[in-house]
Image 1 (tube, rainbow, N blue to C red):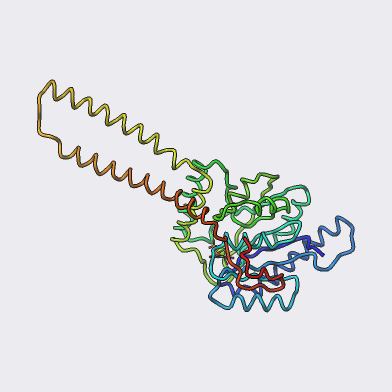
Image 2 (image 1 turned 45 degrees about the horizontal axis):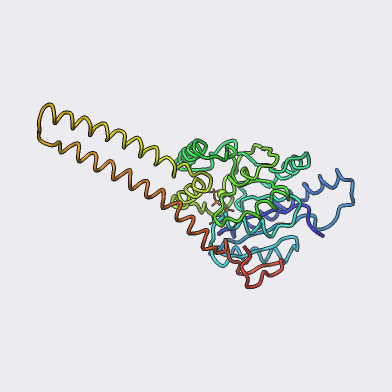
Amino acid sequence: MTPLLSAIVPVYNEADGLPLLYERLSAALDAAVALLENAASQEPEPDRWEILLVDDGSRDASWQGIVGLTARDRRVKGIRFARNFGKEAAMAAGLHAARGQAVVILDADLQHPPELIPQMVALWQQGAQVVTAVRTDRETDPLWRRSLTRLFYRLYQAISEVALTPGGGDFRLLDRRVVAALNALPERKRFLKGLANWVGFTHQTLPFRPAARHAGRSAWSLRKLWRYAIDGLVSFTTLPLHIWSSIGAFVALLSGSYGLYLIVRTLVFGRDVPGYASIMVAILFLSGVQLISLGVLGEYLGRVFEEVKRRPLYLVGEVANLPDPGVAPSA
Ligand code: UDP
Ligand code: MG
């Protein structure tokens, strides 16, 4: 029996939060399924939902916790990565394995309240193919992170061709069609927030207040957030590559006119002592600009390199309550 609803939860060092997550998530899924079955006036059937817990190479007892849950409830399924591949890879693995007609992605730390799922499902029933839960505030994040996040999204909206849902995180319901579209994307490096909008389809949003982390601590260091921000930008805009032609033309024009001015001045007033300051400033400024543009080229070239290597997005080490993918990489 294929499930109606799938919930995908990326798990990284969340052992302490898993029992409560299971309790609240299964209750929310029961409620959501009841809502759908009533509408279709059918007999309630078993196994109408599944929970996919993707252990992204946790260093704590998360996998033992997941195996415990899968033994208790066969609707719970576990995938364990061979190492930490990142949240995007964990979500991708979940999307590959999920079989539900609608798929909900949520965090393991209960910052995304599972109780919202019935409302998301109701919107899906009314025809929405993507339902994004939008945070009404970010009070649970530290101030430095909130300011950096705001700066990033401003920049992103200004230069990217694909809009992001403002305030939208990864707490989202996706219709089977959207999941199929996402699974068919060939790229290795993913930025689901952008891709969910890039694919199109009918969108709806649902406001919510993120809760404080239930247990454990945020796995996102400044370094990880920086990589994530660069990946997000580079996968959805090539503007950073193009602006250099404009900047180059502008600088060439400026230096051309200055050169002309110098020639005329030398012809009219004769030679004078060359300006140390202007040479220094020009050299330092232009080498800075050149290094930045090289860096930008490098970011894109690096991504091309990553993609042409065609390495798998993730490697599965173990599974629970799922057919073993065997030794072949699954993506
Ligand atoms: N996560 C993951 N791999 C990682 C980092 C995080 O799968 O390398 C998961 C984590 O278990 C959680 C979700 O991604 O379910 C969000 O992580 P976290 O709560 O640390 O981020 P924040 O809420 O601070 O944005
Ligand atoms: Mg969190």
